[in-house]
Length: 127
Image (tube, rainbow, N blue to C red):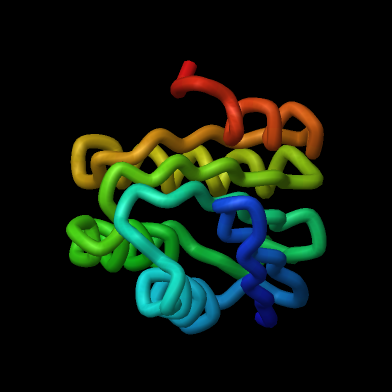
């Protein structure tokens, strides 16, 4: 799994690609919260459209959610838009959101449309 992080206009833009793996997710979470421009509560746009999520298990998604919960203070009230390409990716991201529900003070949403994701992310408040 590979990822890139760019910061522009107050948004952390993460682009993932390759074959999804637990270690890659944990690495990009740490890279974001340790980034010199990161402040708790920032906005994150995660583009998973080039990521193959089929190898991830429920256990992997649960560990990713647990790791996020452990970093809740560093993440803060972040607003996270996740862009996916297919139903499997959508379902895996829904699983993650249900596992972090009430563990993170974040607003997260999953999209299949780039423009809708950006509109929600840059809008006045969560739906």
